[in-house]
Image (cartoon, rainbow, N blue to C red; front, side):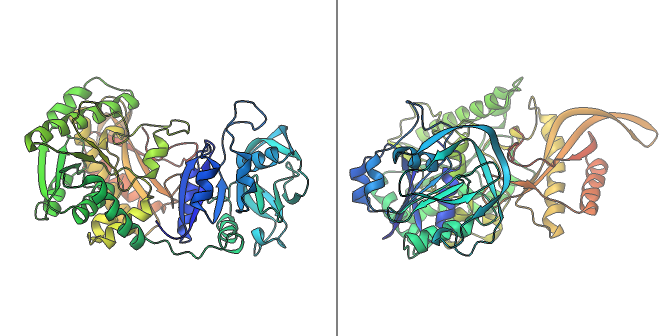
Length: 507
């Protein structure tokens, strides 16, 4: 991709993609590989630095993830995070044991700011801790570089061997100066130049797509969301004339969305086809209440619709998908499964495609948006509100019916309109039809109608988030408009839960 790479070895941590994103924010290309990557391959790659991720295991167990100890002898700077810190200690002859107290959450830490890794940090500073095991004895040549009240060795260094460890997570926003610590590692310790950009990514990805696809046709399911739209623009740039974009109206779209998508893509230099499959999807979802089952049904039907349309097109070599990093981590790829996504896995084996093209698979949402602007897509489309592949099915709790969808659509439109124009920071916002009914009073009559929840969050990575502190007058206006303009709703509530423990979507 570029002349310099930071290698991220994965030991099963939930935040591995977030580490990669933080590194790229500094203009340094990062690549995630398995912790089992042979040391010969690492030597051939010649990364500028290596980062060991966290993980849910204990390093002293025989079956816990590990790596070749020779990785630590390459002379390449290595930064261990959480489990990665403990593993470096363990491999070098130190001691890691189960602690008597757990340390989960944000805690103040004292760091040795005379060290290059922590240069410029003000102490004490808050960091995110998430561990029970801890380092109780350092290997020879290592020294303590940070501590908390509960963890005597919360950071260590061995400058001679260029080995560094932090028990906390510098990649998350909860760690106040984590970005500075990573910057110090990348530039002051690894000597990176910071020459990675979306321009360089685009040039390389176009070449890779052409090499993979050749002269074969490509079929893309175009939802009109940011990811699929940028994917379409990228494929059209890479293999013009070979791409067919199929927009599947599954009956679960937001208000006015199908009409908007038509207006944007029908006049583009693409073979744009619209399939009205609402009856088909809603029939399959009848009586289904489990959110995972909903997602799997929708994913399966998407694949089957693509198969039907592909047959109409003749021979189609590749199925393209707008998969991005958050989709992958939340679908369970070595990490704990949180929820499945319709565009990750689960495709029938008899689709007839030669392969799958996922050009955005290793990009984060902010990178996808930058790439979309670089490809010439309108800003209104690139910066539109994220929308999950399963559509409103994951925002209607319980069984999906046409009646419920007809209630949610205008309520959601009001939420997006009001928050969009209020000028507050809000990275994702939408309405959820909770399925809960309650008693209300309208005029002189009693009502027994649905409760709608408003979800509005602040996030820089969509891996974690906090609820947005919207002004009371904005919430009051949303509530008033929904209860007055949308039949079937008599109560509006505001979701004030962060991620974790919740996810951004309700299902």
